[in-house]
Image (cartoon, rainbow, N blue to C red):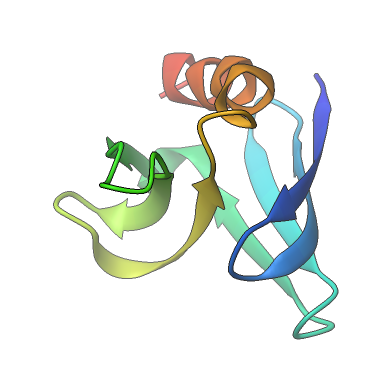
Length: 92
């Protein structure tokens, strides 16, 4: 499974990994990792907003509720981010 190295417009550089069972995000801004298991994962994509950005939500409950994290992607970044998001969503 692939990793996503992403220059998030809000959070700075992040690396998101997915092995088919566990999704993890490593962030340079917070120096922390966030981890979620597929059995409790919901994926939602908002946007594009008026600036062309999309917000991707990885949460434990539907409708952006529960613990989790989000990513921001500009219109130019979305073609590189979207296949990763699609792969994670297809594992649910």
